Image (cartoon, rainbow, N blue to C red; front, side, top):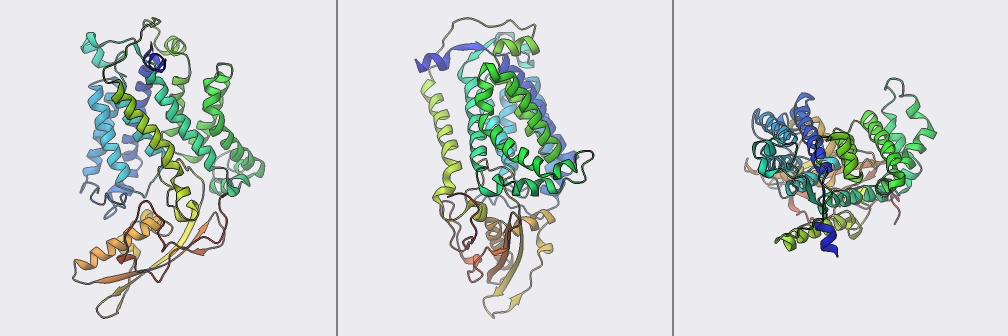
Length: 442
Protein backbone atom coordinates (compact mmCIF):
# COMPACT_ATOMS: atom_id res chain seq x y z
CA UNK A 1 0.00 0.00 0.00
CA UNK A 2 2.76 2.46 0.94
CA UNK A 3 4.59 1.70 -2.31
CA UNK A 4 1.49 2.41 -4.35
CA UNK A 5 0.99 5.72 -2.55
CA UNK A 6 4.62 6.87 -2.82
CA UNK A 7 5.12 5.90 -6.47
CA UNK A 8 1.72 6.88 -7.82
CA UNK A 9 2.23 9.49 -10.51
CA UNK A 10 0.66 12.93 -10.19
CA UNK A 11 0.86 16.07 -12.30
CA UNK A 12 4.30 17.69 -11.93
CA UNK A 13 3.28 21.35 -12.23
CA UNK A 14 4.21 22.04 -8.58
CA UNK A 15 7.76 20.83 -9.03
CA UNK A 16 8.25 22.54 -12.39
CA UNK A 17 7.17 25.98 -11.21
CA UNK A 18 9.09 25.64 -7.93
CA UNK A 19 12.24 24.90 -9.95
CA UNK A 20 11.80 28.21 -11.75
CA UNK A 21 11.28 30.17 -8.53
CA UNK A 22 14.05 28.30 -6.74
CA UNK A 23 16.61 28.83 -9.48
CA UNK A 24 15.83 32.54 -9.59
CA UNK A 25 16.15 32.85 -5.82
CA UNK A 26 19.48 31.05 -5.53
CA UNK A 27 20.81 33.17 -8.39
CA UNK A 28 19.67 36.31 -6.53
CA UNK A 29 21.31 35.00 -3.35
CA UNK A 30 24.62 34.50 -5.15
CA UNK A 31 24.74 37.74 -7.13
CA UNK A 32 23.25 39.69 -4.23
CA UNK A 33 25.99 38.45 -1.88
CA UNK A 34 28.52 40.18 -4.12
CA UNK A 35 26.53 43.36 -4.74
CA UNK A 36 25.71 43.95 -1.05
CA UNK A 37 29.32 43.46 0.06
CA UNK A 38 28.60 40.22 1.94
CA UNK A 39 31.30 38.33 0.05
CA UNK A 40 33.84 41.09 0.67
CA UNK A 41 33.13 41.43 4.40
CA UNK A 42 32.70 37.75 5.18
CA UNK A 43 35.13 35.97 2.86
CA UNK A 44 37.57 38.35 1.17
CA UNK A 45 38.70 40.81 3.85
CA UNK A 46 39.36 38.37 6.76
CA UNK A 47 42.81 36.79 6.92
CA UNK A 48 41.12 33.44 7.57
CA UNK A 49 37.63 32.19 8.39
CA UNK A 50 36.29 30.15 11.28
CA UNK A 51 35.11 27.09 9.39
CA UNK A 52 33.22 24.24 11.01
CA UNK A 53 35.49 22.31 13.37
CA UNK A 54 37.21 19.52 11.47
CA UNK A 55 37.03 21.49 8.23
CA UNK A 56 39.72 24.04 8.99
CA UNK A 57 41.26 23.30 5.58
CA UNK A 58 38.15 24.76 3.97
CA UNK A 59 39.12 28.39 3.47
CA UNK A 60 38.11 31.08 0.94
CA UNK A 61 39.92 31.29 -2.38
CA UNK A 62 42.75 33.86 -2.36
CA UNK A 63 42.49 37.32 -3.87
CA UNK A 64 39.28 37.89 -5.75
CA UNK A 65 38.65 34.18 -6.16
CA UNK A 66 35.45 34.23 -4.09
CA UNK A 67 33.86 36.75 -6.45
CA UNK A 68 34.37 34.28 -9.30
CA UNK A 69 33.11 31.51 -7.02
CA UNK A 70 29.83 33.35 -6.38
CA UNK A 71 29.51 34.40 -10.01
CA UNK A 72 29.65 30.73 -10.98
CA UNK A 73 26.99 29.95 -8.37
CA UNK A 74 24.78 32.71 -9.74
CA UNK A 75 25.10 31.33 -13.26
CA UNK A 76 24.30 27.83 -12.01
CA UNK A 77 21.20 29.25 -10.32
CA UNK A 78 20.06 30.73 -13.63
CA UNK A 79 20.67 27.37 -15.31
CA UNK A 80 18.46 25.72 -12.69
CA UNK A 81 15.76 28.31 -13.31
CA UNK A 82 15.91 27.74 -17.08
CA UNK A 83 16.24 24.00 -16.73
CA UNK A 84 19.51 23.94 -18.66
CA UNK A 85 21.81 21.00 -17.88
CA UNK A 86 19.61 20.87 -14.82
CA UNK A 87 21.08 17.91 -12.96
CA UNK A 88 24.66 19.11 -13.28
CA UNK A 89 23.66 22.68 -12.44
CA UNK A 90 21.82 21.87 -9.22
CA UNK A 91 24.48 19.41 -8.05
CA UNK A 92 27.20 21.98 -8.79
CA UNK A 93 25.35 24.68 -6.89
CA UNK A 94 24.77 22.32 -3.95
CA UNK A 95 28.49 21.56 -3.68
CA UNK A 96 29.56 25.19 -3.98
CA UNK A 97 26.93 26.49 -1.55
CA UNK A 98 27.83 23.77 0.98
CA UNK A 99 31.43 24.94 0.72
CA UNK A 100 30.41 28.50 1.56
CA UNK A 101 28.29 27.34 4.48
CA UNK A 102 30.92 25.15 6.10
CA UNK A 103 33.89 27.48 5.51
CA UNK A 104 32.67 30.33 7.73
CA UNK A 105 30.63 30.98 10.88
CA UNK A 106 30.69 34.78 10.98
CA UNK A 107 27.41 34.92 9.07
CA UNK A 108 25.84 31.72 10.32
CA UNK A 109 22.18 31.36 9.49
CA UNK A 110 19.84 28.38 9.75
CA UNK A 111 18.35 29.41 6.42
CA UNK A 112 21.69 28.76 4.73
CA UNK A 113 21.56 25.22 6.10
CA UNK A 114 18.01 24.76 4.81
CA UNK A 115 19.18 25.86 1.38
CA UNK A 116 21.75 23.04 1.34
CA UNK A 117 19.02 20.51 2.17
CA UNK A 118 16.62 21.80 -0.46
CA UNK A 119 19.37 21.87 -3.09
CA UNK A 120 20.31 18.29 -2.25
CA UNK A 121 16.66 17.23 -2.51
CA UNK A 122 16.21 19.03 -5.82
CA UNK A 123 19.20 17.08 -7.13
CA UNK A 124 17.08 13.93 -6.83
CA UNK A 125 13.89 15.36 -8.31
CA UNK A 126 12.92 15.36 -12.03
CA UNK A 127 12.35 19.11 -12.08
CA UNK A 128 13.38 19.66 -15.71
CA UNK A 129 10.73 17.47 -17.31
CA UNK A 130 8.75 20.43 -18.62
CA UNK A 131 9.17 24.18 -19.28
CA UNK A 132 12.94 23.76 -19.49
CA UNK A 133 15.69 24.10 -22.04
CA UNK A 134 16.59 20.46 -21.44
CA UNK A 135 13.09 19.39 -22.50
CA UNK A 136 13.14 21.78 -25.47
CA UNK A 137 16.45 20.45 -26.75
CA UNK A 138 15.45 16.84 -26.14
CA UNK A 139 11.68 16.43 -26.50
CA UNK A 140 11.92 12.74 -25.58
CA UNK A 141 12.60 13.80 -21.98
CA UNK A 142 9.39 15.80 -21.62
CA UNK A 143 7.33 14.62 -18.64
CA UNK A 144 3.95 15.73 -17.38
CA UNK A 145 4.01 13.70 -14.18
CA UNK A 146 6.17 12.76 -11.22
CA UNK A 147 5.99 10.17 -8.42
CA UNK A 148 4.00 11.45 -5.47
CA UNK A 149 6.98 11.14 -3.12
CA UNK A 150 8.61 14.08 -4.94
CA UNK A 151 6.00 16.35 -3.40
CA UNK A 152 5.93 14.91 0.08
CA UNK A 153 9.67 14.89 0.79
CA UNK A 154 9.53 18.69 0.54
CA UNK A 155 6.42 18.91 2.75
CA UNK A 156 7.92 16.62 5.41
CA UNK A 157 11.16 18.62 5.45
CA UNK A 158 9.32 21.90 5.96
CA UNK A 159 7.15 20.32 8.67
CA UNK A 160 10.33 19.37 10.57
CA UNK A 161 11.79 22.86 10.17
CA UNK A 162 8.68 24.70 11.34
CA UNK A 163 7.91 22.31 14.20
CA UNK A 164 11.37 22.50 15.72
CA UNK A 165 11.39 26.27 15.25
CA UNK A 166 8.14 26.44 17.23
CA UNK A 167 9.34 24.16 20.03
CA UNK A 168 12.56 26.16 20.38
CA UNK A 169 10.51 29.31 21.03
CA UNK A 170 8.83 27.74 24.07
CA UNK A 171 11.14 29.21 26.69
CA UNK A 172 10.72 32.10 29.16
CA UNK A 173 12.57 34.89 27.35
CA UNK A 174 10.55 34.32 24.19
CA UNK A 175 7.21 33.88 25.92
CA UNK A 176 7.57 37.07 27.98
CA UNK A 177 8.65 38.90 24.77
CA UNK A 178 12.09 39.83 26.14
CA UNK A 179 13.83 38.46 23.03
CA UNK A 180 11.38 40.09 20.61
CA UNK A 181 11.84 43.43 22.37
CA UNK A 182 15.59 43.15 21.85
CA UNK A 183 15.23 42.09 18.21
CA UNK A 184 12.86 44.97 17.42
CA UNK A 185 14.74 47.49 19.57
CA UNK A 186 17.20 48.12 16.76
CA UNK A 187 14.43 48.92 14.28
CA UNK A 188 13.40 52.30 15.71
CA UNK A 189 14.77 54.09 12.67
CA UNK A 190 12.49 52.24 10.24
CA UNK A 191 10.31 54.61 8.28
CA UNK A 192 6.61 54.58 9.26
CA UNK A 193 6.76 51.39 11.35
CA UNK A 194 9.79 52.05 13.60
CA UNK A 195 7.80 53.46 16.54
CA UNK A 196 5.07 50.86 16.15
CA UNK A 197 7.61 48.06 16.47
CA UNK A 198 8.57 49.33 19.93
CA UNK A 199 5.08 48.87 21.39
CA UNK A 200 4.54 46.05 23.90
CA UNK A 201 1.35 44.73 22.26
CA UNK A 202 3.26 44.38 19.00
CA UNK A 203 5.94 42.39 20.83
CA UNK A 204 3.31 39.94 22.04
CA UNK A 205 1.80 39.65 18.57
CA UNK A 206 5.22 38.93 17.06
CA UNK A 207 6.22 36.47 19.81
CA UNK A 208 3.05 34.42 19.96
CA UNK A 209 2.15 34.95 16.33
CA UNK A 210 5.56 33.59 15.31
CA UNK A 211 5.25 30.60 17.61
CA UNK A 212 1.73 29.73 16.43
CA UNK A 213 2.67 30.26 12.80
CA UNK A 214 5.59 27.82 13.03
CA UNK A 215 3.46 25.29 14.88
CA UNK A 216 0.34 25.39 12.70
CA UNK A 217 1.25 26.57 9.22
CA UNK A 218 1.98 23.15 7.71
CA UNK A 219 -1.25 21.49 8.98
CA UNK A 220 -3.30 24.50 7.89
CA UNK A 221 -1.75 24.47 4.42
CA UNK A 222 -2.43 20.74 4.10
CA UNK A 223 -6.11 21.12 5.03
CA UNK A 224 -8.09 22.23 1.99
CA UNK A 225 -10.58 24.34 3.98
CA UNK A 226 -7.87 26.52 5.53
CA UNK A 227 -5.29 26.40 2.72
CA UNK A 228 -6.03 29.76 1.05
CA UNK A 229 -6.21 31.60 4.37
CA UNK A 230 -3.03 29.92 5.60
CA UNK A 231 -1.27 30.93 2.39
CA UNK A 232 -2.31 34.58 2.81
CA UNK A 233 -1.06 34.49 6.41
CA UNK A 234 2.17 32.90 5.20
CA UNK A 235 2.71 35.65 2.62
CA UNK A 236 2.14 38.35 5.26
CA UNK A 237 4.35 36.60 7.82
CA UNK A 238 7.28 36.11 5.47
CA UNK A 239 7.07 39.58 3.94
CA UNK A 240 7.03 41.03 7.47
CA UNK A 241 10.18 39.06 8.28
CA UNK A 242 11.81 40.18 5.04
CA UNK A 243 11.08 43.87 5.67
CA UNK A 244 11.81 43.94 9.40
CA UNK A 245 14.58 41.38 9.84
CA UNK A 246 16.09 41.35 6.34
CA UNK A 247 16.83 37.62 6.18
CA UNK A 248 17.71 37.31 2.50
CA UNK A 249 15.85 34.99 0.18
CA UNK A 250 14.37 32.75 2.88
CA UNK A 251 10.96 34.47 3.15
CA UNK A 252 10.48 34.30 -0.62
CA UNK A 253 11.70 30.72 -0.78
CA UNK A 254 9.19 29.80 1.94
CA UNK A 255 6.40 31.43 -0.03
CA UNK A 256 7.50 29.56 -3.16
CA UNK A 257 7.46 26.27 -1.25
CA UNK A 258 3.73 26.74 -0.68
CA UNK A 259 3.11 25.50 -4.24
CA UNK A 260 3.60 21.95 -2.96
CA UNK A 261 0.60 22.32 -0.63
CA UNK A 262 -1.87 23.30 -3.35
CA UNK A 263 -3.50 20.86 -5.73
CA UNK A 264 -1.45 20.24 -8.90
CA UNK A 265 -4.37 21.35 -11.06
CA UNK A 266 -4.51 24.69 -9.26
CA UNK A 267 -0.81 25.35 -9.84
CA UNK A 268 -1.07 24.24 -13.46
CA UNK A 269 -4.06 26.53 -14.11
CA UNK A 270 -2.27 29.55 -12.62
CA UNK A 271 1.26 29.18 -14.01
CA UNK A 272 1.32 26.59 -16.81
CA UNK A 273 -1.96 26.89 -18.68
CA UNK A 274 -0.56 25.40 -21.90
CA UNK A 275 0.74 22.31 -20.14
CA UNK A 276 -1.37 19.15 -20.53
CA UNK A 277 -2.72 18.15 -17.12
CA UNK A 278 -1.75 14.65 -16.05
CA UNK A 279 -4.66 12.78 -14.51
CA UNK A 280 -3.95 9.12 -15.19
CA UNK A 281 -3.83 6.19 -12.78
CA UNK A 282 -0.22 5.13 -13.13
CA UNK A 283 2.11 3.56 -10.59
CA UNK A 284 5.75 2.89 -11.45
CA UNK A 285 7.94 1.32 -8.76
CA UNK A 286 11.59 1.76 -9.78
CA UNK A 287 14.27 -0.91 -9.43
CA UNK A 288 16.22 1.39 -7.11
CA UNK A 289 13.24 1.73 -4.75
CA UNK A 290 15.08 0.38 -1.70
CA UNK A 291 18.05 2.67 -2.21
CA UNK A 292 15.79 5.69 -2.70
CA UNK A 293 13.68 4.94 0.37
CA UNK A 294 16.80 4.19 2.39
CA UNK A 295 18.43 7.51 1.51
CA UNK A 296 15.38 9.58 2.41
CA UNK A 297 14.62 7.51 5.53
CA UNK A 298 18.16 8.10 6.77
CA UNK A 299 17.91 11.78 5.94
CA UNK A 300 14.71 12.29 7.92
CA UNK A 301 15.97 10.26 10.88
CA UNK A 302 19.01 12.55 11.03
CA UNK A 303 16.75 15.60 10.70
CA UNK A 304 14.66 14.41 13.64
CA UNK A 305 17.63 13.60 15.87
CA UNK A 306 20.02 16.52 15.23
CA UNK A 307 17.79 19.23 16.75
CA UNK A 308 17.43 17.14 19.92
CA UNK A 309 21.11 16.52 20.57
CA UNK A 310 21.51 19.50 22.90
CA UNK A 311 19.35 17.64 25.46
CA UNK A 312 22.12 15.03 25.66
CA UNK A 313 24.73 17.70 26.43
CA UNK A 314 25.19 19.23 29.85
CA UNK A 315 23.89 22.75 30.59
CA UNK A 316 21.83 25.22 28.57
CA UNK A 317 22.22 25.37 24.79
CA UNK A 318 21.52 29.11 24.84
CA UNK A 319 24.58 29.50 27.05
CA UNK A 320 27.05 26.88 25.79
CA UNK A 321 25.97 26.93 22.09
CA UNK A 322 26.66 23.17 22.05
CA UNK A 323 24.00 21.67 19.80
CA UNK A 324 22.79 25.05 18.56
CA UNK A 325 23.74 24.73 14.91
CA UNK A 326 21.78 22.54 12.48
CA UNK A 327 18.77 22.54 14.83
CA UNK A 328 16.39 25.23 13.51
CA UNK A 329 16.94 27.50 16.52
CA UNK A 330 16.24 30.77 14.68
CA UNK A 331 16.49 34.30 16.17
CA UNK A 332 16.02 33.03 19.72
CA UNK A 333 18.48 35.07 21.76
CA UNK A 334 20.73 38.07 21.89
CA UNK A 335 24.27 37.71 23.22
CA UNK A 336 26.99 40.19 24.03
CA UNK A 337 30.37 39.53 25.55
CA UNK A 338 33.80 40.74 26.60
CA UNK A 339 36.88 38.62 25.98
CA UNK A 340 40.60 38.78 26.65
CA UNK A 341 43.15 36.22 25.44
CA UNK A 342 46.13 35.78 27.73
CA UNK A 343 49.03 34.18 25.84
CA UNK A 344 51.94 32.86 27.90
CA UNK A 345 55.34 31.77 26.57
CA UNK A 346 55.83 28.31 28.06
CA UNK A 347 59.63 28.59 28.11
CA UNK A 348 60.02 31.80 30.09
CA UNK A 349 56.52 32.54 31.42
CA UNK A 350 56.45 35.84 29.54
CA UNK A 351 53.04 37.34 28.81
CA UNK A 352 52.57 38.03 25.09
CA UNK A 353 50.02 40.81 24.45
CA UNK A 354 47.30 39.99 21.90
CA UNK A 355 45.24 42.54 19.99
CA UNK A 356 42.21 40.98 18.36
CA UNK A 357 42.29 43.63 15.63
CA UNK A 358 45.60 42.18 14.42
CA UNK A 359 44.07 38.80 13.64
CA UNK A 360 40.31 39.22 13.24
CA UNK A 361 37.80 41.21 11.22
CA UNK A 362 35.06 43.18 13.05
CA UNK A 363 32.49 40.41 12.47
CA UNK A 364 34.94 37.79 13.72
CA UNK A 365 35.72 39.82 16.84
CA UNK A 366 32.02 39.90 17.63
CA UNK A 367 31.89 36.13 17.20
CA UNK A 368 34.89 35.39 19.39
CA UNK A 369 33.36 37.29 22.32
CA UNK A 370 30.41 34.92 22.79
CA UNK A 371 30.92 31.57 21.02
CA UNK A 372 32.85 28.89 22.94
CA UNK A 373 33.72 26.89 19.82
CA UNK A 374 35.09 29.98 18.10
CA UNK A 375 37.04 30.94 21.23
CA UNK A 376 38.60 27.48 21.16
CA UNK A 377 39.33 27.71 17.43
CA UNK A 378 41.01 31.08 17.84
CA UNK A 379 43.12 29.66 20.67
CA UNK A 380 44.25 26.92 18.29
CA UNK A 381 45.01 29.57 15.65
CA UNK A 382 47.17 31.46 18.12
CA UNK A 383 48.96 28.25 19.03
CA UNK A 384 49.73 27.52 15.36
CA UNK A 385 50.76 31.14 14.72
CA UNK A 386 53.37 31.15 17.48
CA UNK A 387 54.54 27.61 16.74
CA UNK A 388 55.56 28.86 13.29
CA UNK A 389 57.79 31.34 15.13
CA UNK A 390 59.23 28.53 17.27
CA UNK A 391 57.39 29.63 20.41
CA UNK A 392 55.35 27.19 22.51
CA UNK A 393 52.46 28.97 24.22
CA UNK A 394 49.53 28.51 26.56
CA UNK A 395 46.26 30.36 25.98
CA UNK A 396 44.02 31.39 28.86
CA UNK A 397 40.76 33.20 28.24
CA UNK A 398 38.78 35.68 30.32
CA UNK A 399 35.28 35.86 28.88
CA UNK A 400 32.05 37.25 30.29
CA UNK A 401 28.77 36.94 28.40
CA UNK A 402 25.26 38.30 28.72
CA UNK A 403 22.28 36.42 27.25
CA UNK A 404 19.19 38.49 26.45
CA UNK A 405 20.60 41.46 28.41
CA UNK A 406 20.79 39.49 31.64
CA UNK A 407 23.77 40.13 33.99
CA UNK A 408 27.16 39.17 32.61
CA UNK A 409 28.53 35.80 33.71
CA UNK A 410 31.86 34.12 33.29
CA UNK A 411 31.71 31.77 30.30
CA UNK A 412 35.20 30.23 30.14
CA UNK A 413 37.32 28.67 32.89
CA UNK A 414 40.30 31.03 32.85
CA UNK A 415 42.53 28.39 34.51
CA UNK A 416 42.34 26.04 31.51
CA UNK A 417 44.92 26.26 28.74
CA UNK A 418 42.69 26.18 25.64
CA UNK A 419 45.70 25.66 23.39
CA UNK A 420 46.15 22.26 25.00
CA UNK A 421 42.60 20.87 25.01
CA UNK A 422 40.73 19.00 22.30
CA UNK A 423 37.23 19.71 21.03
CA UNK A 424 34.68 16.92 21.42
CA UNK A 425 31.73 17.31 19.07
CA UNK A 426 29.44 14.97 20.99
CA UNK A 427 30.20 15.90 24.60
CA UNK A 428 30.12 18.96 26.82
CA UNK A 429 33.39 20.84 27.09
CA UNK A 430 34.12 21.14 30.85
CA UNK A 431 36.00 24.42 30.41
CA UNK A 432 32.68 26.07 29.49
CA UNK A 433 31.42 27.20 32.88
CA UNK A 434 27.76 26.53 33.81
CA UNK A 435 25.14 29.23 33.57
CA UNK A 436 23.78 30.53 36.86
CA UNK A 437 20.50 31.54 35.25
CA UNK A 438 17.60 29.50 33.98
CA UNK A 439 17.34 30.31 30.27
CA UNK A 440 15.13 27.51 28.99
CA UNK A 441 12.57 25.16 30.41
CA UNK A 442 14.08 21.89 31.56
